[in-house]
Image (cartoon, rainbow, N blue to C red; front, top):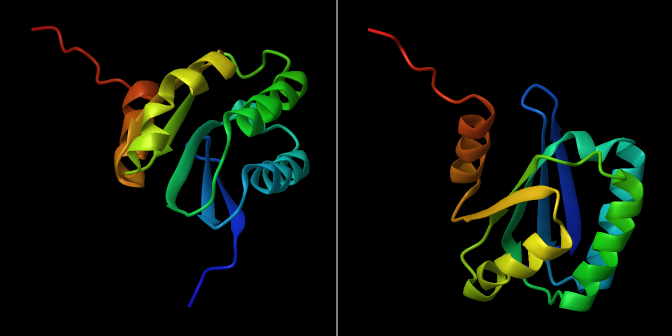
Length: 136
């Protein structure tokens, strides 16, 4: 049974995290169109850290698709995404290797790559709530 291609978005308002799951065989243009629609419904997606889960993604996303979306995102966010975190979840070496491209087109985000969502969420939690030093 094949999965219906789609973008799934879940919001954790307590931790201020959006989890995006790219599922199935969806080309980059269709993926970003769905994502933009969901972001517009959300109203203020730039206030959240992102977990972008590629673990069930079978499609092809070109650099051009990503660059086009990044321009739309920049116009929407207008710098309000400064200091946000983006955790990419993938075991695909090609997606992981595009780290420098993502960093250049989403300059306001601190971006890292993880093997699973638990690692990604842990990184965001540790970054947002660092352990406090105890004075002896």
